[in-house]
Image (cartoon, helix red, strand yellow):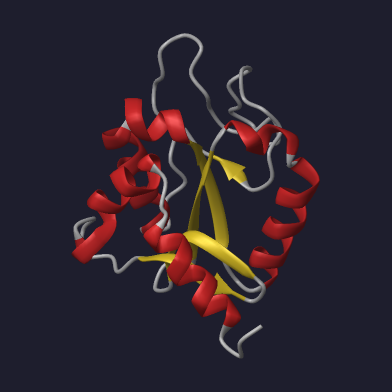
Length: 148
């Protein structure tokens, strides 16, 4: 393994980003979200985050269906990232496809230090994780703060 293995792996992940990551990146790149600087596939310790805003100490993770079984891993990962001073928020991929403007509003509110209300979703939409006081019942118990 090379000395810069996390950086090499991040580079590979950037080249193979998911459709949801590409869609969100179009809203975050080049300071498009109110001037906030975002990095994609950014290494933090042994983990590579989907999106990281260092100035806001905020990490945004996108989860596909496979994450519904990865609760223990996600819990450990989130705990580590939080121990490094980051807040972690998570969105399901379908939220990016169906509610991208609202997702960006929630991300922007977190960047600004606000505690956003969940955006309105149609019936059956995903929301915050059950740990959140305003949870929407259909949300799975994933690690980190499920926003939406």
